Image (tube, rainbow, N blue to C red; front, side, top):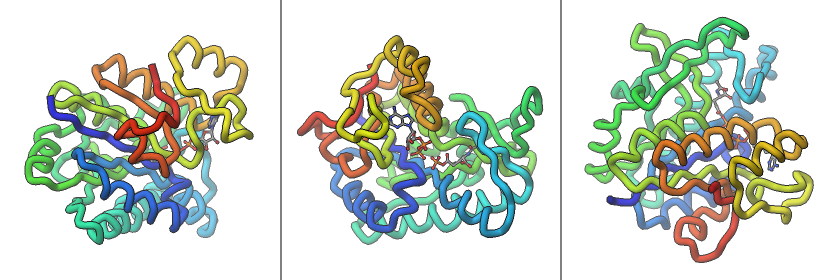
Length: 263
Ligand SMILES: Nc1ncnc2c1ncn2[C@@H]1O[C@H](COP(=O)(O)OP(=O)(O)O)[C@@H](O)[C@H]1O
Ligand SMILES: CC(=O)N[C@@H](CCC(=O)OP(=O)(O)O)C(=O)O
């Protein structure tokens, strides 16, 4: 099967002009096709706070009021998505920016209001992804750049966690491609000591993860990320990694071992 890389990049890279510039340049060096899924939670939080709209995240998910949904849509589907596409175009990566509503790419269902009302947050499954559209775009040698806004096909936009979109897109394409899923962020991988960037756990399995979670060594945004990683391996994704965004080329070409390989 043909190799396909599903790459997720998070808000701390996106919000750093230099790191994002280096990252998009590195993506242009990849020889295999890829799909990029991006977050941008940090910029949405900063913007909402400037507008005096308080933000709350529960288990890494944003409680999304009508006002917050507007900010999320303008931030993720607007500025961030188009900025990444423009950055890639300068290196001749012919990319196309999409929300889940575009081309009916990602259909979601508003999360149940019990036990916690998350507001306009959408949940997705493998069946939510329009894989025909993604395959057609790849055949046309267009690189999809996907943001964290989805829709319910009843006219409502919904906010969906970008880690979950990356996992679900990877799983949905794993029957058609040899899929590698890579989460890129600002640290060197999953760390044994979150204060020490040199304490990278090179290989992490689910048993070790549960023990580190219990000890509080793995917490916050890393919890949903790792849950998505283990789910991807169970659903047929061939390889899953969590790495520093600056290591993307080395990690994919396997020229050096860096970051955390999920086993
Ligand atoms: N053991 C750990 N190793 C690395 N990061 C960790 C660990 N435990 C918690 N984290 C936190 O998880 C964060 C990554 O999750 P998140 O903020 O959701 O990233 P992103 O926006 O890139 O998806 C890191 O910035 C770090 O603060
Ligand atoms: C429902 C939900 O939590 N959506 C996320 C989508 C963006 C995201 O996931 O951004 P990062 O990858 O930068 O964290 C949010 O609004 O924060």
